[in-house]
Amino acid sequence: MPADRLRPVNAASTAEPRVVVGAAIRAGREILAAARAYPPELAGLWEFPGGKVEPGETEAEALRRECREELGVEIAVGPRACGDLLTGGGRFLLRIYFATLEGGEPRAKEHAELRWLAPEALDSVPWLPGNRPAVEAIRESSVEPR
Ligand SMILES: Nc1nc2c([nH]c(=O)n2[C@H]2C[C@H](O)[C@@H](COP(=O)(O)OP(=O)(O)OP(=O)(O)O)O2)c(=O)[nH]1
Image 1: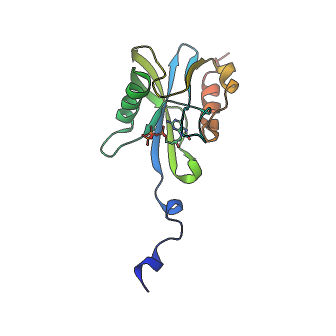
Image 2: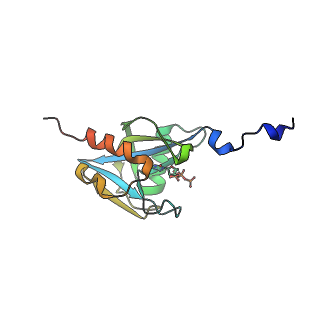
Image 3: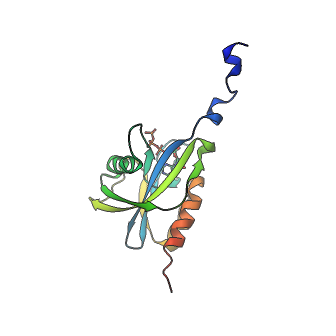
């Protein structure tokens, strides 16, 4: 049988998902949310600043690089906010980390808008659909013990 007959019909669906990291940057009670500016099908949906982990880079390094590029800030990377999330039709493995600001004030260098959201305001923006479990976990982790 010719080799090309053995190739999966839909290579994208069988490829290993690419790891994407996002920073849930906390300041006091608030978390920084960012509205995507592109691509058109994602524009106006909200996410955590971040992006794809490049070969040879740790997840924390990728987060620090993306926050420098996208927001112009230095961050300290903290613990994971929730478990792995499969998004983008199985193309991405999304890992959200809590983070804090170490230097600079965030500016929207690549996003359409940035907003600091208190836990009770987390639902006030339309999140990327794959982010819902992370947003829920962050809200629950913000509930103050009685
Ligand atoms: N940065 C980020 N991406 C997310 C989140 N949730 C989610 O589903 N994604 C998806 C959207 C994108 O299709 C995909 C990759 O993210 P990205 O486009 O920001 O990655 P990148 O900065 O490395 O992009 P590029 O250089 O390849 O253009 O991950 C999130 O909270 N933050």
